[in-house]
Length: 254
Image (cartoon, rainbow, N blue to C red; front, top):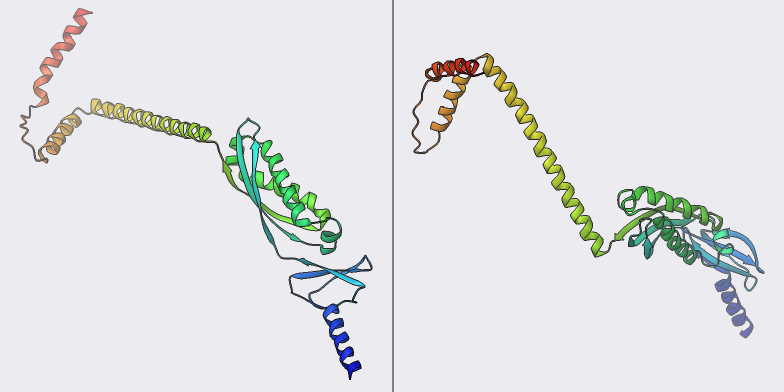
């Protein structure tokens, strides 16, 4: 009886030590007497107790925040930049044997790369060409992590923290730019209005009756308002003798 119980206990111990169940997104790197056998999974895995050792590795996409980094841009502006990187393990064996801790190594590499790339760009490039910066970061990180069996799919710069002095200077610059655009638009409007007035004057000069019609239209617009203004319409033809007299006097004076 004791022998049977001992056998059952040993069998249970063996099963507990030998049987592993891995999820669909997990792989197990098997070491047998210190040597890598293969990456197995998912599902049921049977190990040899004492002889085999398994290191579990996840294959899901990992989103990792990169801590804010103090960066001095190429135009000597001090900023703080943080980012997020998305990567996954493509080769579990390399991720275990090529680097001690791939999560920590990727995080440190992302921090140094972020400082290096942002330090080579000017502030305007960081603010307006963020997609280009993201592409450079992704390419550099993917190249360095490829020997570890890691694929960096996306890198995104999340936030650029500017000093207060720089924020005030940029606000003044933006305000001045808006004022400049407003003045240019106003000047263009005046120019177009003057052009139209000159064209209208030419048409009225060719057709004098148009001025009389315009005069009557103005009277109509004024009378439509509720006011106490009194108007005395005077025909413009009454002033023609005086205008003719002025035209005759001018040649004599010259």
